[in-house]
Length: 249
Image (cartoon, rainbow, N blue to C red; front, side, top):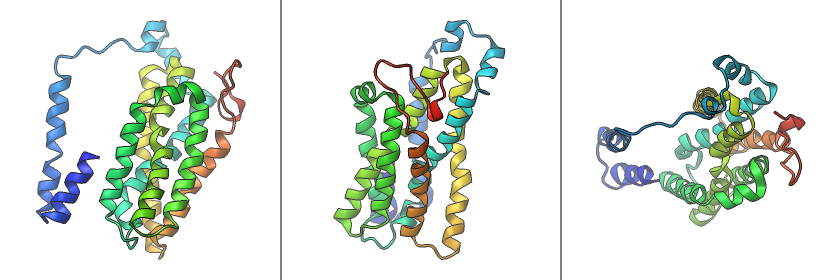
């Protein structure tokens, strides 16, 4: 959120050289490095559970893990592909796209900070199901509405939808496949970043074929729409948790 505002000030208000903008990336790098220096990392759940290295690898080959890994690609692409192409996707809507991105990330920061009670009520699969529905609606609204007020309203809906995707996906793995340990979480994080390498070229290809930003947003909405189908089974109170397609641990 802060980075988006800084980018707007440097590039749109002060019209400074783009290298100055890139140079600001060093600031959080130094801050994070200082905060992490001397910290002790706790043992992973896998080590605490006494799960062997071999069984950790077996855990990441389970059907539930692989299906959720596919879902991670879709959920991360819904968030990251849209965010990275926000300028071209919202071109002509009468808004400053970078400020819309700051607005989206601001809502996500607040939402993730107060996610605890919501997660406890909906459980992880319920939260993912909710996120898929709201993300789809948000993308469809963004692909339809124009003007500053309506564009920010649509962005707010989209932000609520993608807010819980990434952390809840990791939480699902940690809760339901803890034997996968740090390897499982790392694979999911890597898959989330990899998703942009898969879907950004597709988005660019659609642009080259003459698709407008609104049309690309509608195509992108197909990703969370597919997740609605996959996440249709929720965690039910008092029952054993079920993942997509009824798969359990």
